[in-house]
Amino acid sequence: MELLFPWLAAPSERACVRLGERALTQRQLAAAIGGVVATLRARGAEPGARIGVWTKPALETLVCFAALAAAGYVIVPMDPKLGEAERAHVEVTAKPAVILGPEDVSLEGAGAWTPVPIRGETALLLFTSGTTGAPKAAAITDRNIAANLDMLADAWAWTGDDTVVHALPLFHVHGLVLGLFGALRRGGALRWVPRFSPADLAAAVAEEASRGSAIVFAVPTMYHRLCEAADQAAGLAAARLLVSGSAPLRADEHRTIERLFGQAPVERYGLTETLINCSTRGDGDRRAGSVGRPLRGVELRLVDDARVPLSTAEARDLGGEICVRGPHVFAGYLDRPDATSAVMDAEGWFYTGDVATISDDGFVTIIGRRSTDIIKCGGFKVGAGEIEACLCEHPAVAEAAVIGAPDPDLGERILAFVVTRSPVEPGVLVDHVAARLSPHKRPREVKILEALPRNAMGKIVKTALRGA
Ligand code: MLC
Ligand code: AMP
Image (cartoon, rainbow, N blue to C red):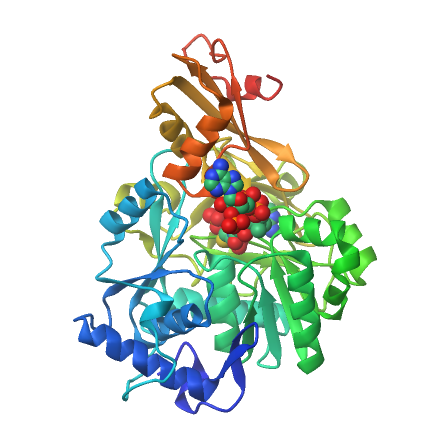
């Protein structure tokens, strides 16, 4: 019988979650978990039920997630900034029995409860965008989480002596699974900075490093801003590891981080559906532009458009789509066997849509993506189709096409092209998307065109929009 957070068998007085001045020890967290379980039972929700959690900036939010994972509920994280249409989609798809906010959590604790052993059951439903349609709920099991976190512990020599410091949202893999569950599985702590600013993140790193060892998890946009404001971010240099992921880190920025903060970043590559696949090792070669080698326990290969595996020479010289297999790969999309079988074959290989090369010594370099309709903006994955559909719901819009344009800060900027039926200000359309969908899905720029470029078949040619 293995627990996701093994220390729950004998909680200690070590701090395990901290937000600003507030912190809880393992013993206090274990007691507070009892309170959450009692609240849920009083509302008729037994372990196994799906529970929504508003990811609001409070210590109680961390308690809520820890409680649900430890007691065997199915977690449905919910961004408080979800637009109306998105919230309705989450509720209809995931059907949470109860939705909790920090106000529902008391830190006092109540009653006895039993941690649930790892069973290979769905522990987490994470909504993730595709090229078309509304986001799908990826079902991630407790075993996926435990296996992947243990692979990362091996790669980074990550132990209970490390405090993770991050300023990430808790409704995605990076902030929740790696940040919170990772810290708790190792028996260390998470210091959460709920709102990112270079100065606040760096100050938290300096403070945690002065207590012991700090490791930083951030997306490339955050590292870009930390470098731009290096005079306010000197505290970052006190970290044991600076880990970057969720989007490509440019090679020049990798070197700038090393120059400004005295250490090269450790890069790792993952997806919501697979958790983390590759990383450079804490004690290994941190090569600018590469996401390192597959983690121990991950099978990784490159395939061509017909899903035929490439030879070593082809993988090095031509590149192909990354596919992966292992105990970290998710259970499928909730109620969407069609969508699941499109990305996962009968042998358990998951097709990522990312295109890479692999060097002779096994380092993976991501060189692109199969679909132009997936955009990574600030580390958030956004599907062009969802934004296009939303723009077309505005009465002034006849047609819309959305692309990701290169951006030095966001990696990719969401750029929309529209053909209008009646006069409309571009800013009105930006606000329309920001209100109906999450604000991070809003186009950063809307351009009005007479017509969209189309090929002989009548299909919109997105590559022709790049220079428009
Ligand atoms: C701006 N805002 C608007 C608006 N314009 N609101 C309504 N209408 C409009 N028209 C508001 C926003 O809501 C926000 O509010 C503020 O203005 C700034 O918005 P933003 O510009 O979008 O935020 P920004 O500062 O650019 O955020 C950068 C960032 C963020 C790096 C902090 O992108 C981020 O947190 N990224 C992390 C993504 C992540 O965790 N990805 C992991 C995926 S898992 P307010 O109130 O907030 O200021 C994964 C797997 C793996 O990929 O490998 O890890
Ligand atoms: P998400 O669905 O939000 O988890 O996004 C997963 C996608 O993020 C992957 O398919 C990649 O395109 C991208 N990604 C994640 N980590 C990296 C990285 N280190 N380098 C390049 N791309 C990355």
